[in-house]
Length: 306
Ligand SMILES: [Zn+2]
Image (tube, rainbow, N blue to C red; front, side):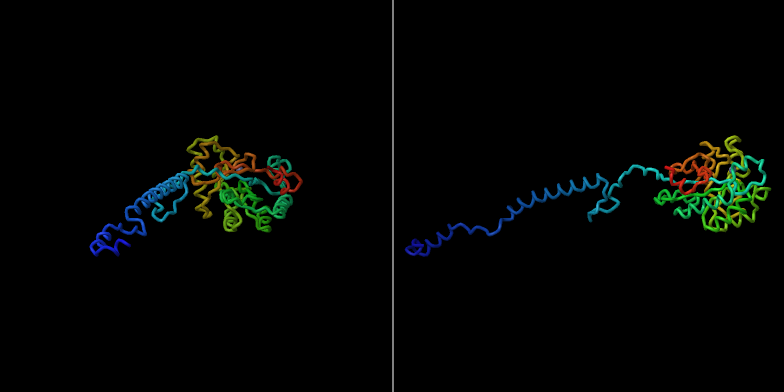
């Protein structure tokens, strides 16, 4: 300052030229790029790692710049078959057997009074009654707690006269397997009776083979015709698209199962003992003989099975 006062204007001008420009308040454009570029690289790297980890772990990517179709679908192992305890009870005759010398019939029969005690005990114990055709839904929807299925084989006349009135009284569902070729024969239900069952809403009609042949013991062609004809007759005579089949005499093997499946059936019930059902074994459903409960409560007997 003292120099500029003692010297002329030209000196002041020279000094002014030599004064360095004031330091910029903000970093220059070059120094800004030097900071932003590494930050940009780090962000890109982090984003790429995030995307890789999310898609690798099969989690759907929700970032806005990816569409859903760009995301690899997770490859999950096949779902395990659903399993649960569902006792499928097998009844034959519900009647007071008139011929005391008919030991086979007596061994298959229970009296209407005993049958009613069965139904009453299950209703009072909180059991829910399902059709055979409901089994898959019951298993997959985890509704199996105290689920039970009643099945009646052969389509005998006593189902209509003795069992059906009790089932109606308690409004209980059951599945009835008929031999369509034996309807109207002595000892079997009549066609109008079966039609009434079909319309009742509490009876599922299932196939049992046209004439109760042992399917394992006949030629494959005859077994096929028997199963297919029976199912068609259920449709034409009773308007029923049957999905449940009962192997006559409980006799089946892989070939018979395939014939039954090809005919349009989803379920095949057997006489194998058991109460644990599985979605991967619907063509070999085991059943429980209610006579095993003896004179005790059927509900208590079923509760004790595990
Ligand atoms: Zn039978």
